[in-house]
Image 1 (cartoon, rainbow, N blue to C red):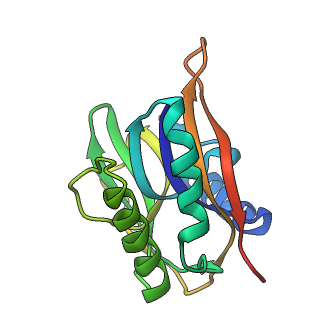
Image 2 (tube, rainbow, N blue to C red):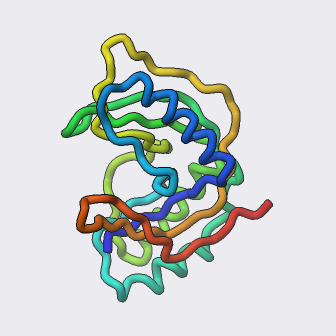
Length: 176
C-alpha cells in the first residue's frame, strides 16, 4: 500500500479548484488534469507500508492538533518533471498548517516510520505532464481561502487502465 496523509478540500473549495483547472485547460495543449476526487494537500508521504502498520498510522490522526479550517492560496506555478511540467497552486505557510505538518512528522518518526528528507512546501497539484507555453506566467492569487473538509490517511492505487485512485483509510473531519 502506498500511503500518505493529506488535507481534503470541501466541495465548494473543489469547485474553485476545478474552475482554475478549466481556465488552465484552455491555455495548455497537452497534459493531464487531476480528477476532482484526487485534489488534496499532501502533509506527509509515507510510501509503501504494510497492512500491519495501519492501526498505528490511523491512531496518529487522533493525536494531532486541530486541522486548519482553511488553506490560503498563494501562487499558481509550475515546475519541471520527467514528462513535462507539473502545475501546482502553492499555499501560504500559516502557523496552524505548519504546526500540524511538523507534529505529524514528529509522531511518525517517534513510531519509527521513515519519512522523505525534503522540506514541506504546501501545495495542491492541479495538472501533470503539461506543456506550458513560453508566454505563460505565474499567477498570484487573492487570499480567498479554500475550506478544508478533513485530514485523512489515504492509500494511492493504480488500476489496470493506469488510472490513479485514492482510498480513504481513516479520516477526521474539520471542526466548524
